[in-house]
Length: 491
Image (cartoon, rainbow, N blue to C red):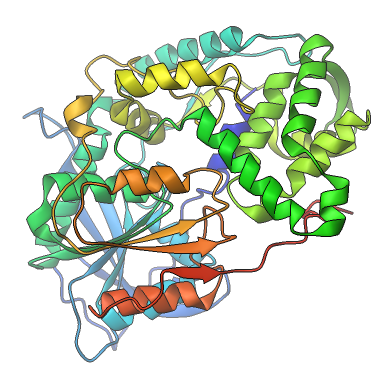
């Protein structure tokens, strides 16, 4: 079975499907661009341009093949346009053009008042050339008990198979690193004819932006990052995940009815984990043809579920209900989630870009030692970033080394937006990620999670003030909590 966490994560990364059409009234002013009609999921349309660059897959190889790196450009609407604003999607593996189609479409449009907005499809994503996905033959029998070591061994074997598969397809995995993506940004700046570019990124997109501040600082005008992931933070520390659960409990405690239902979420999780470790629960998992298959629910499945659910408060409120039901012996909600996200009988599948990017960014020896010391007692164990660090160093020559993982310095203006209930990148770590920078404005978005841009119009107002070059007048925004007595899957 493909990792539940990976399915939850990659399910949000579908590439865009865009309608290309000649527009009589619009003409591209950048070579190689094609006028198009961009259609958002809401049905709204806007005139835009599709652009492409042909770039080496691996710049260190003089014989490297060329790959297409694509973007969508939304022309500026303001009277005075600043540098192009390049959106960097998260993941790694997210699509800039796909993100622009979704809930953030209004924000993409609003940012045009400051300059052209570029929905950038990083190499290997979206409308850019994508290496073929690899479906390995590493099958797992979900009716049988498996240890954490068994799961890791399966993924490492799958990676060996997929590495050979991608090599046979002509894919050079050494070209799928954050440092190569930084070089793509430099080439994009030249392609657009700009002296500098502004960067706007979230999650892994912030990781890429911070790497750009290290490698091409003179080409960057200013940076907006949310839910920041530092250059040595691909692997999150389990103790900080546990601290997140304490913040989640405080949020639940602020609602008396929810506090009565879930007075001790961490204790509840540990109790369910211990019970499943001692005696896994056999379930009948319904299939689309009306049949069912046996599925042995184990502790590691719950840790994977928790890792996938805690990014934002709205999804996190499923978690206490899920654990509470299992604590009472009711697997209904677990079966519902497994029906959505599990794929029993399928081999482990891997995508080249996100797999290689994470392995390349890697983890320092010091941080890996902390991770290993904390994982055994952590609420989600080693699964928050699975299959990292389990695959760290598994592809020879790919890891970018500790020099890459050194945090950036300099005085480039940076706006950092941090959600207090972010279950993926944590407030203390986000401060550490930008500690070497001299011109950082941090705005705390209280009660927001990982995907905070659209939680309130006030986030956009802060971003506009920063882009105008003026002082950001507030250091905190407060958004409403969801009702923790209900959850999105409730019938």
